[in-house]
Length: 482
Image (cartoon, rainbow, N blue to C red; front, top):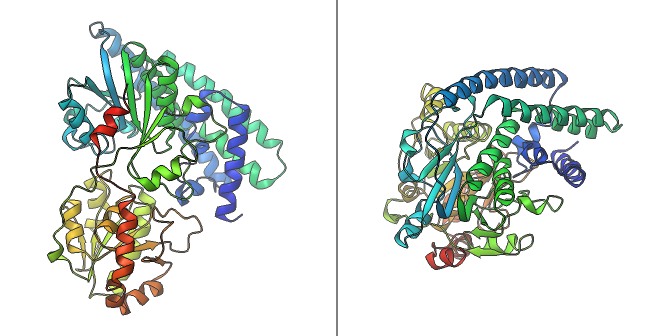
């Protein structure tokens, strides 16, 4: 089955499950949340028989390890009980996930500018950071995020509660595994079998722990407004569900801060309204138009992504900015292609810019020890410094593509013969090249000056991108709060 057809089949099966099973564990299962429907998502449904059983035993092993960690957590929490928590009035809670071990409170890429605006207006604020970095970091302290108004939610819990949650997931696993045996269609049988296995994935368990912890916090406080990032992740649905159950009067806001891709699903029609925000914040007019097809209350509050300064005098037509998402498979795909281009075209310089969630250890381990040509540079500079020196850029699913286009860089979407489109600029084509191979890129290299001198098309591209991101509007933010 082709990837695009497989994606449609997964969507049909997922919607059927949502219609017939309203248990919160369904929304906690990441494979039932299509998110962007990217190639990495599709790949998870192509498990061999051996890989299926490998994952099964791996998940069971991780659960045993998680039990041991949570027994220690339970003992420690019992022996060193903290003083009784006092309920407080909170005007706004802002919830996002930790994307890096070295994440700093002063560099909050999601709510940093919004919190500064509201602090000046004397709003009582708190931030909750969800630690989704995995078992290795479950008890991490994250000292750079410590503040009286910050709360870090780690996915540890009293082990009796852990067993209760896990037992419910075991029942779901066997329910959908047995249902898969009744399906004669080979592809659909495989899809449902893999969905059933995902109930045993520690990530599903972690999502339900997040739901319990957020529910407890909101229940113990008087929370007027709650804002969270809204990209389509399962953990976001857990926060939405917890908020709606704990405090129906709380105004719940989903901040859709990135670009929407062609196959991205934020909320399925088959899902309960418990997983749907009351208000959607977004960053520009184009996203608002798309979001209004599925959501009633959409407000454009803008973004601070466009606030950087670019020095146009530093631009070089031979410099190409390479901007992968924070997904390992995407990084490998784009780095290998740009490495091939760098070897073939030594007159061009490729500047590799990694996502903030990618650790320096990963970069050092995978790239610093490699023999890479001199015309590849691993950037440590700020985004707008890199944009200042480049005339074009390689991208796939990165939202930073819009920022680069706003400053007149020519976009190369690296499709690389993939049938699933994850291009955030998918509805714009007049000043852009879709690249499937080195030979496609060769055409640009030979016609470099002609592409970059198409002034009218370039102007149209910049005007289009400016509808995506507009300047942050404090009045719109405050008006949407209660």
